[in-house]
Length: 264
Image (cartoon, rainbow, N blue to C red):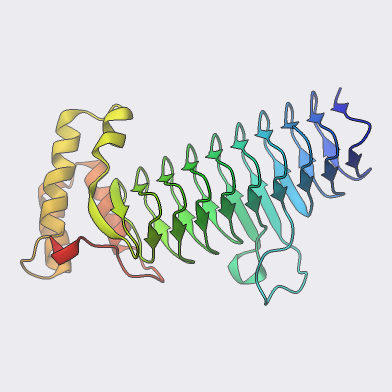
């Protein structure tokens, strides 16, 4: 049974799971699905074809599922899929997809989205991510698992940020950031690996050492990038973490690669 405040407006077409809480002055549209134990605190508006996974908690003034902020959008059918156990704080905005981007914006499980953060249309966001206050990502971005975006950071549309990467506060990310990488600065550059994050996630010393050595090889000044990737693969073909970085770099992308200053 759900607990709906008498000042909330929940459309009869909406689907609510068991033990859903809809607080004062919330508005829930006709095509919204709230799974079991979702909690809406107050003053939240959810519309469009939006699904929110079980045990998620949403705080006041969040706006989820409204039309994408894209001038070419003409009302075509699109969706916003939000996973389980997400915490979505005040004034967060998340938009559905567009026909140009596959029609779906996806957010994985157990994310923490702090006040004022934004997920734009057609983005694919992984699990266990953290978006600090006012962190924003443009349309069509891919944010992989365990990424942390610092406060007031901004990610350019079509950029990929690899798993376990860390983006420093107030950084502007124009180019793809490798898995485990750390990027900082206005028009950010790669500033090594996210060693603190790796230690917090329980990575063994040997694994971190291999990543460090691979990083130095990949971003050295000798030879071409293709040659350096081939050499690194020969040395670390059995290391799944290093291969994740190599495969990320080799994957075709709409953006260039975020690299260290002075290429080293």
